[in-house]
Image (cartoon, rainbow, N blue to C red; front, side):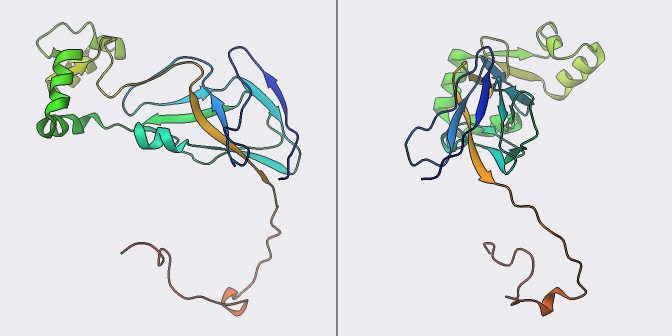
Length: 209
């Protein structure tokens, strides 16, 4: 197996990327801080390391399949690219894709979920104090409007909405893969159909029907 040497500078809270198995294509990277990601929230998670890549190598950031399957965590720009000239802290753009508007339907058909919410969560009604919800907005008018649209909020013990993701420092948050960079030389032509073989079929013709 070919290897490439990557110079890496570790900052506070970071860990060296690591391969779970020798033949794995992706190396795991770890959250440098505890993370709280509310439903539909999108943010950059600093990995707290810097790299100096060879000029012909790119580093791609990709989701971990386990997190993608078992949680609502997504990496919206996957694969993210780190170019050889980048020397700042490497970060991962993550998003909690859970749509809280689905919760009433989930509760309707899942008795265990209803029991768990009654046990572990509390309901903030529109008639209750606005203090908790005001932490998400400095504008009182916006707070009132939201509470009128959604007459209740289901909050956990930290006063975060149902569906909030919590990850501890050191959680395997994503994977990185290294690829050789090949630059294209663009040659303008009048008729690409005359070059090579045209397989036929339009855009998306190989998709599912």
